[in-house]
Each structure stands twice: as structure tokens, then as C-alpha cells.
Length: 418
Picture 1 (cartoon, rainbow, N blue to C red):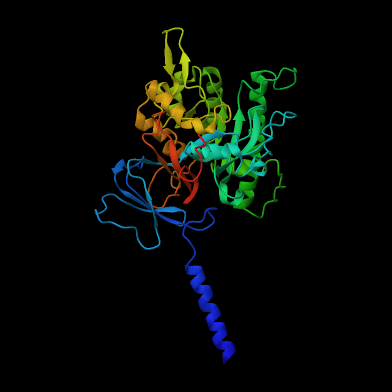
Picture 2 (cartoon, one colour; picture 1 turned 90 degrees about the vertical axis):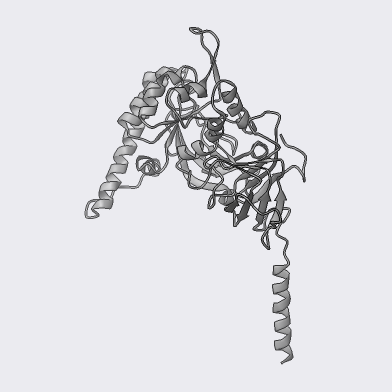
């Protein structure tokens, strides 16, 4: 009888200990519930709300309360974050990033469809931490542009204790470079643009035939089963449009090749992930095909014909790309300066709401992830950034970054990183 009473007391003490755990742990290990109140909530997709409340639970946005009563208090179990006088915006989405790890290029072969960045991710590295301080919460970590087809990239959050906590989707996208950096000087195949286009088309055709063979077998398993080829496996999702091809393509002539080969011939889901120089002159053709453009890292061009600078994101928008965005090609431009790319686009003609959407919901849509990231809406990931003011104003800065409902950066607890 005494042993039974002792066992019950032990269970009771264990339960009390569990319930008494703090909601907020310094290492972010606990699942937190937050009530972020005050300030200006910029949802991006549903306008701005002055002085509202964001409830966060289980790593997602639970609810937005537009007009709380003056005596409103957080529900039991929610920790209050006072954002009075601040701007609350969605975490930014960077579609062209190289900062999550190393070994971005292997220069032996010009086309490398079997390569992937998934194995190279280095969580919590210094560049990712600086990205958090610039409000960047999602990044597409892609191979470099040293070859025509660098391999498959990884879509991930910029914060998390390990890859499993950071990962959103793999493959995130195939990386192709159609000119510029991969132009070789050794005289081998791929030296010229005509050679590069042959290599890209040839590799994609091989992947297309491989995909069709597997599709035929899936439809009728009485047929001979194809032999699995690890080098070509990720092409299957590409041709099923489960993820896009993001293309290092810039200038009129290269973008014309992108449209013809990747979209018109191969029928791929294409995202233009540079688009600089005079590429915007093809905006009507790009818009006709429903292709999104993430311009950068150059945001302006001197026009000798007209005289003066032209804002590239603005010219894409004016030409018909209403979902235009920008990128940094980090670390070419530091990831934390993504917002400055958007600010420069505004300085050169782009509307402010379009510029902010370009690094949030437009970028999310370019990756097919708009139901999860890119705006402040109930049910979406709690990737939330609190700014001192309008983020498009270079005088403002981030005071708190939340990724998946966990605080990744808080200037009240550490020095400002950026």
C-alpha cells in the first residue's frame, strides 16, 4: 500500500513539473505560444491592420485579431510580445542563395543533374544568422553558376537546430545557367553558347525520356520496368512540375534561349532568377508564358539610348510581369540586404506594395509555396519579423525575427547583427 501511494506521488510531481515548464526557453527548444500585439500588421495579401494581435501556436499563425478590445489580454498560456509603434511583416523569401553551405560547383562536367545541395547544408552558420537579422526566413539554396546545370537546390528556413527542422522541400528547384559564368575558356564542349545550349537540351531530353519511361510503367505495370538511374531520378519531379527550374539568365539573347528551350520545347516550370541588363525588353513574351522574374542582384542599368538609369524590376513590371521580385545572389550581395534590393527597386520606379510582395508572396508563388509562406494569414508558418518601422526605409532595422514560431533573433537579448 505504501509503495502504491509513493508511486502516485511521483506521478503527481512529474505532472506538476511538466506543467510548470516555461513557455519561452532561451535555446528555443520549447514549443511556444505568442500573442504579438500593437504596431502595424502588414499581411501583404489582405492589407494592413493597425494595432491588431497575431496569435502564434504550434509554429503557425493561429489567428489575427483586427480590433482587440482596449482591455484585451492574451489567452492563458500565451506570452505577450509588445510591438507597439513597430511594423510586423512576413519573413522574406530569397530565391537565389548560396549561403547555407559550401561546395557550390564541380567544374569537371558542364551538366550535373545528379548533384544536390541537400548534403551541404550547414545549419546555424554565420551567414544564415545575418540573413535572419535582415528579415530573411526562407531561402532557396542552389548550386553555383560555374556549369550549365549545377544540380538541384534545397528550399529551407534560415533558422533551425538541424536540417530536419530547416527543410521545407527537396528538391527545391533545378539550377541552370544559360550563359555568362559557365562559358569556358578551355575550348572544350560548352565553350560557346551554342555548345552550352546543346548540353542543356541534351541533358533535359535524356531526363524527359527517362520520366516518360517510368510514367508508362506506372500506368501499365505489365510492361518492362525501367532501370533506376540515380543521375536522372530528380528529373521525374521536374517534368511533373513538382518544382521549377530556376535559371541564371540575363540579357535579351540569353532569355530568348530560356523561353525557347526550357519553356516552349521542354514545357518546364521556369523562374527567371537574374533577368538583368536588357532582358526586360522581353517582358511581354515572358508574361505571355506566365513566367515569374526575380530580378537581381543588379537593380539598375545605364541606358545609352535614352540616357539615365533604368530600374530593372520596374521595367519588368511595366512590361507585364506583375509578380516581379528581386534577389541578392547571396553572398554576391549579402542576404541581409535583400530588403535594400527592394528599396532600390522602389527608388527607381516600382510601387512599394509590389516591392514588398516581390520578396514575400510573389517569391513564395514562384516556388509554389504560397499556401505556407509569404504572407501573414491564419494557418501559415509563423515566419514573422518585427521592424522599427517601414522595412523599405533603409533607416529602419529588424528588432525580432521569428521562424516557425520560434525566436531566431531578438535585439533585446543580443547585439544587433545587421
